[in-house]
Structures are given as structure tokens and as C-alpha cells.
Length: 116
Image (cartoon, rainbow, N blue to C red; front, side, top):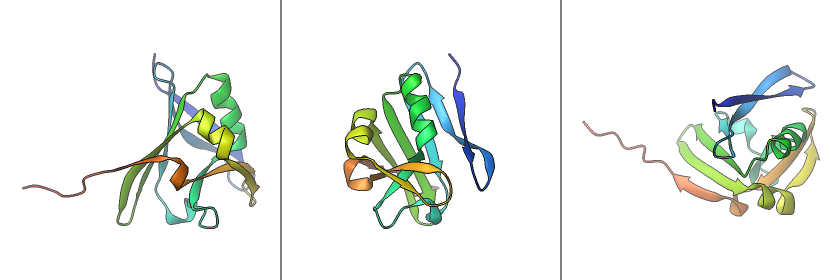
């Protein structure tokens, strides 16, 4: 089964790509490429509430975020159950979102060293 693109309607930007869903593994992947996508107040990252509902309909198991900007290059992962238990609903002008603190997610650093 091919990778599925998941979109959302951001009130300030219109229809945007939220991430990619792999039905065969139940993994949703969102890429974070800007520092302003981090919710510093909550020490975490968010998923649009409508995307979360869509992922539940698609029987998603894991939300994975690849954080890659500036000096950062790592992956955060958490099960849908963790998002349900610890996620906080917020709204800051881009529609309702669910924020999860980084300390509730598994973190895997990426090796950014280059070899010649």
C-alpha cells in the first residue's frame, strides 16, 4: 500500500500538508523544519486536532516527528495512546492542535557527522 499524504485546513494558510501516513505500519510522519513549529511553553510539538481524528480513523499506531533545522536532527516518536493520555489541546490562530511534550516521546538522535 502506498504512502498517503495527510492534509489539514489551517485557518491562516489554507490547505497544507500535515505529513505522510504509512498504512502498512500505522506510522504517521511529520517533518519539523522551522524553530517556530516548537511550542516552547509546552516543551513540545503539535499535531492539528483534525489530523489526529483522521489518524484515528486510519488506525494509526505511532506519530513520528523528524525534527531537522539549525543544529537539530532527531526523531521523536510516541504512540497514539500517549498522545491521548498526555496531549494538551491548544489554539493559537492555526486551528485547534494537540501538543505533546518532548519528554513524553522517545527521542533518537541522528548522526550528523559526515565522513569523507
